Amino acid sequence: MTWREYATLAGQLEAHRGVQAARAVGHVNARTALGAELTSLEELLAGQQERLSELYDRFDLSEPVLSAQQPPQVTDLAEALRRARDAAERSSSQLTAVESAARRSPYLPHWSTNLRNALVYGSTSAVAFFVNVAAFLATSGVGRLLVTVLFIALPFLAYGVGSSLIGVLFKPVLGAKPPKTRPLGLAICLAPILPLCALWGISWTVGG
Image 1 (cartoon, helix red, strand yellow):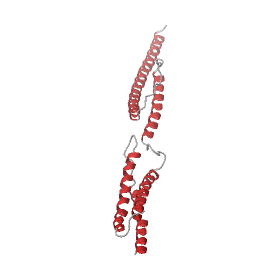
Image 2 (cartoon, rainbow, N blue to C red; image 1 turned 90 degrees about the horizontal axis):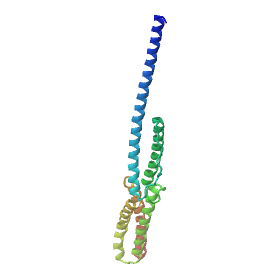
Image 3 (cartoon, rainbow, N blue to C red; image 1 turned 30 degrees about the vertical axis):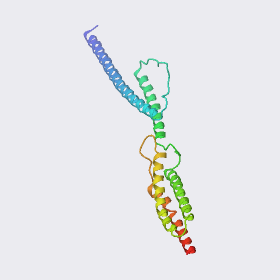
Image 4 (cartoon, helix red, strand yellow; image 1 turned 45 degrees about the vertical axis):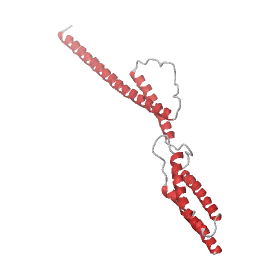
């Protein structure tokens, strides 16, 4: 072997060593990056588990038992990362579904806010209206002048009772208080004042 051939072989060997070293460094960097991402996913899963546990406590439910069997050991970081991602996606979907249900009204959850509130305000307004009519029919003469005070007071009382009922009946487990839709409530509860005043006027005219 000549000196030139020896130098060529030595150069090739050195180049091969450089390639192998670069591959080793790249492999280490890849494993480090995968390990860091896996750790981040594990922290995410732990946080989601805490949120789910809190929701189960708020709903007074037992947490599901997933499996008593230990999962197989994973030596490939890429495979472990894929499994962690799948678990995180499933956990996020379940968490979103539970939180969405917890933010809905416990009663009539699929009704719109205006429709639910209109039902409550309409009910309290109807009760106030019939009480006013009954009180009006049960009195006569000067007593009916005093009943007209109820024509004004009871509709506002109906609005207050309806607003309180909405806050109690439709309050979600999570989230803010349900909207009271006050303009809608006032319109529904004060609407009977006109027919009541008309009834009083007709009765007073006929009686007079």
